[in-house]
Image 1 (cartoon, rainbow, N blue to C red):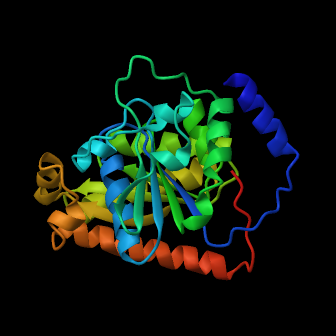
Image 2: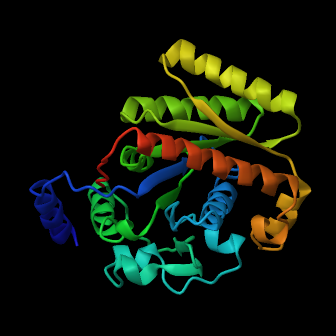
Image 3: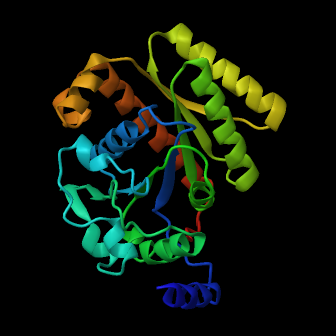
Length: 282
């Protein structure tokens, strides 16, 4: 596969890099540590965007530690490892969860999972670029933390959403993650979501501490996309392996995710209006 990857990457470097795909936005959902609810947010956020009449592709890029399929009680017939092992093309991996929400699942705990290098990831993005024009949004549920592969990935997306919980250690991890993103990319469209907050005072303090550190030490800004409060409905939906937005649509957390999705759409619409043409290139 390495020889094929090298040939594709070299061909890509010779391509015209000004192709215009005006409607496709790419989003990396990341976290500084595990346990913040990143995958839960990615799935429910993607579903809510799809309910707002946007065509969404959700891709599980938590290589060999994937759990999106568990959240919806789905046994994946094909996963990303089939693509990396050249058994399937990307289009064959797409699971149509709903009319406007498609998902590409990853593997969990596979002993023979291929080692993912930058070249392999570049090959993945080259192939992904062939199917992205049919979507309004492509969302990547990333691995927790800021390893080299994750940072390479976020450098290729239009928006990064950091999911953090409000306790001080998680806020510090979110700061470190943002620092790594700033140092590794030129992407200025970064957002924070505070998840599992007990109350407004707690989430306000967490964001204030984080934004203060970001401004002081990194001379940058991190926009608060929204807050998701601690809600037992979230726990129940995870245990029941059902989507929160479907099982408990009137719960506090579901309503807050709905508001986050609407806010995000407004932000991306404004950005799109500010430039008549944009280039999406993986």
